[in-house]
Length: 162
Length: 134
Image (tube, rainbow over all chains, first blue to last red; front, side, top):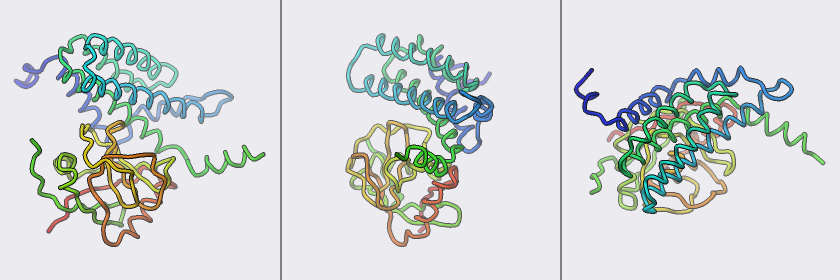
């Protein structure tokens, strides 16, 4: 164990772990994307499972972003912010690892969730939820890159013509 | 205290197409300093789905600054802290609202515009943002 690792608080260690995981998927598509695309939704198609996964990733990214803003600007008490963040991370983390098979993403969210009780300051809270938000947001954009948007847009237009 | 910026211009590249952008160091010193510190940036570009002629890339950090917040115009480059995205408005579009803006595309942007537009059909292309060498 390095000197650096020994001196990190549990929250700092979690933030660094999440940031390292995020750095690893900057240019390389994470394995979770392949696992997600193995999953099929109603009537055997993959569009709905893909879009619902994107929606749920974006939801947690945005929710945590708002909680971070509240922590930094509103003066809300830390215990309340931690409780709300924990509820959201627990729910969405289970969702990612369940139906969508995005087990690595679920593990990252779990890392954030497990570090939350150790958060002692607004700065630590902001760093932790910011790191989780950034990671799940990156996953959403990786899924986005797999979606054939022009073809989808054309098919949708054709299907909704009166 | 805002770190003093050195980079006055950046170069944006997708594939073989590049363009230059002027850093708005007077209007957005905090934003410019944060971006400068992260250069060179290399990430997959995502095409916007609502405003039309915009691409963006997610950065691995947040910038808590609302400097130079303005309704985005053709050629503006901003940062949206909500999703940690660096947003490039590469042509005429319908902005969703105001955004902190730290740079502005300059000079010949036609080639870059074509490359940026192609990310709609071919998502995930790598965009590189680097300091312009003197």
